[in-house]
Length: 333
Image 1 (cartoon, rainbow, N blue to C red):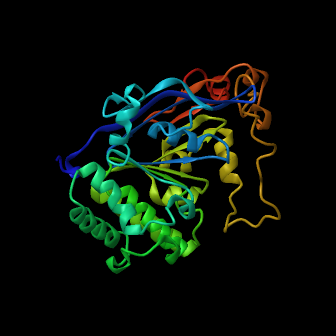
Image 2: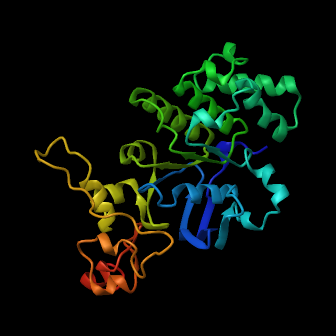
Image 3: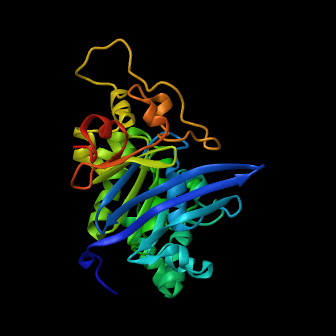
């Protein structure tokens, strides 16, 4: 097997991905033309409001969307150049767990309450590595120690663990087969602040040690700043701004991104009230034409209601906004 530390270059390429849900004679347009690339060893944060489509993007990559009602209506998901959407359904279990793993949002429901945690970690190792039960158990004990849990708790049940420990077990399951890509869906949302910091630090260390790629889904810009190399801002099923942490945090371009930063409390400014983004995200069953953020944007013009332009500001920093065409000419210069 190739040493993980020797892997480099492009791992994942999502190209023009679109997903919709069809139920009760309605069509929910959850993901609309999402594109991004991720290299080995990189960490990407996907941020945005609840319902923006972040988890749907993650589940589409793993191909675990419920069908029906979910339907992939377009795009490609290339893993080392292979389009996962062309892989037969009966072959996907060989990829899940071994090439791509996911840490689900709620550790309380991600674990089987009637199975010992050691068994749940070792199960994936037995299936993917085709090793004996004894070998899988030894590997599972080593992984437990990696995530900071003593191996003498190997035979305990999930209810015997705290919330933070459960999350560590879920991460151990995801990392059991050294996946090339780890997707973490709000892995710290159920944890207190102290445990959050410990779990994020542990995930970062393991990711760098194995040179795996990470997609971190969160609402928290602080978590993204601490853990990621790149960030994609998701709104109404679109990535409306994408770039490195430095690019997006220091020079945000999209009015929505600027609004998110303006809504964060500042320790250096004395203000009576925060500055929220007015309005609500659009109804995904009836998305507006043109820019989806236009109804909430203080910079909107008539052009915004009809079209949206994507601008490349260099070094991978891009933004979907008409404002730069109008003010600075085509190309956002």
